[in-house]
Length: 109
Image (cartoon, rainbow, N blue to C red; front, side, top):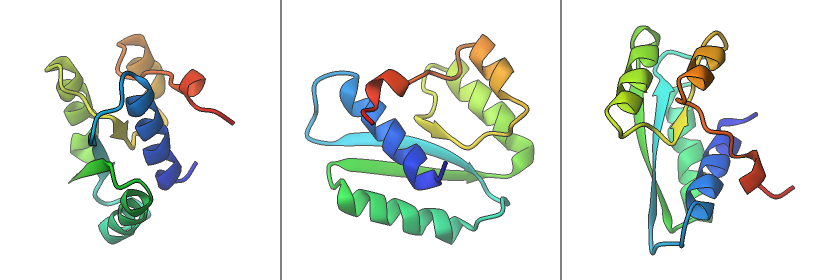
């Protein structure tokens, strides 16, 4: 799944969660040193927000070493993120601790 699709899924979940507001803000957390660059993510996000001008995306980048803890701590503080790029070894832990939310029923084919 592309990162643009991840943002689109999160946007759909945020918009379908309640009445549409004038502007929706998504908070997204990405790994700073992945196979893509921050510029790639910023470019994809700019394309996304151009197509969806009522959705603002706050991007945050952290080193891999801090990604897990930042994700868990944000959830524990009650704020959490709408979109997180996470390692393949964390989904079971995140699901068990309600860090992830299944939004497939909010997305139309």
